[in-house]
Amino acid sequence: MPYLLFGCLLAYPFLEVMSLIWLADTIGTFWTLIWVIASFCLGILMLRHHRLAMGLKLMHDIRTGQVGINSLLGIARYFIAAVLLLIPGLISDAMALILLLPWKSKSTIGQPRPDDGIIEAEYRRVDPVDTTPRIDR
Image (cartoon, rainbow, N blue to C red):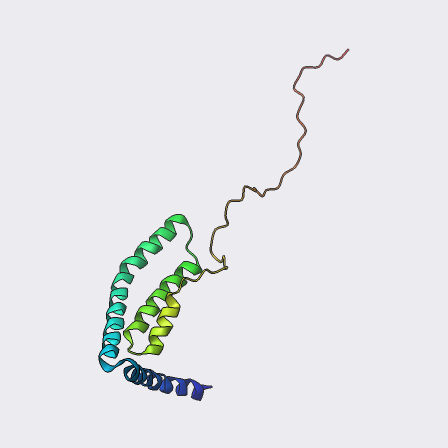
């Protein structure tokens, strides 16, 4: 297993360089250079924006009581996508774009339940006490 991980770590940069060579051969060196510079600048802008956006999103989630795993994973996905855009290559750009897709999770871990109008409680029946005065004859 450690050799597989080591092999993947060695193969990744090789595949990134090969994808850039293939792109330069397909669309030209100038446009490939533009692609790499544009993706790098986009990654920098996303990281700059991430600081402010992360703070505002977390404060909004705390105020509404919706801090959960989904909101934290959304912030992490945005950050990882920004870092992947900084790495030159088509594979990292494709992974970043996949991470930026809007995913809707069905998980409700840490999320408050919606108000459906049902109040759950325990109850017991208590007969009313007759407080009218009685006249015994």
